[in-house]
Image (cartoon, rainbow, N blue to C red; front, side):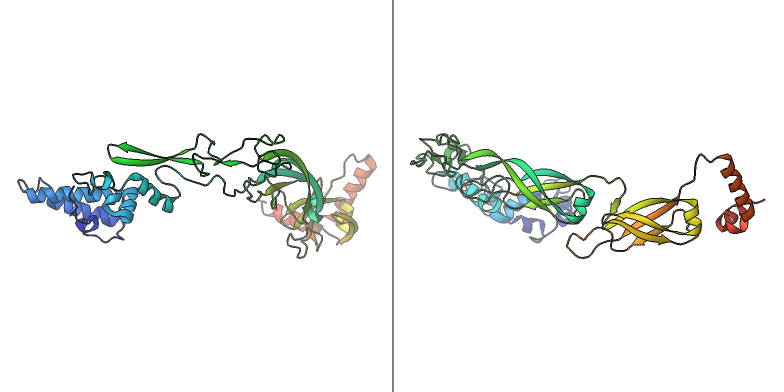
Length: 379
């Protein structure tokens, strides 16, 4: 193709920052204007129509548009600039290896893939485990032990993989890079690609005398028991992160983290909502009528609380400061106690008669809610 091609944005009459919708609208307008059916026998209109379609094909495709914006025609047209001697893709010209290196600088890898240094420091993988604690342990904090199988640096070779007194040889084929550059002729010109070095297996080094303990890997798997400090106020499902307690890094890289998911066992009496503790307490009919001093269980132990006479079933009382400590160490929540009246069972004859006489002596005046509710439904 000729090298005097017009800029695609100029062809469509839009700016370089034009949106997808603006490009689409401009193309439709020009395509209608220069379509061969609208201009029969007009060679100039036909050429412009081809030019418009070529511009739209590139600018309407996000990938092609990005390459065009970065490299111009050379980024989207492999034949652009080709001359009698091969031009841009002929001998001594621009090849895909060069373009791959350019793309690699922007996107992390060229046409031959990423070319990471195999001997560069690499961070170890993080590990995940769990720990089971009681309701009270979650409230006040505790110390637990967890056992994990993790990858550690070999103590004999200190991660080198070599037997004592020996060192690894830099691979002569890849010169320590771990990859081999391959250049081959294609119908489009020369193409450069990268492949793992077969001699060293992509490691960039050759170990002639492997460490007998780790077999040349430089790492061993070891079972480790670690003490974990559980902070007061932690909740079910929350995660504790221990820095650098995961798998060891490679080539001097940092170790990964150990993530511990906390599982809190349900309590037989208490429930938790945030920093609040909730529970229900049964009271007798007499206690509800006359009032009483109760011993209420809390996570700190039993405390005395006086309920007033005439307490209704379902009434909730607050015990200030008897809830869960804040995870950030600031203050404590409250405990909320909901009382309900337990109906006595298995009454004997005398008790039933006494209860009937007591009920008859009261009448409806002592049951305000009962009177109000059923009074609404009288016909």
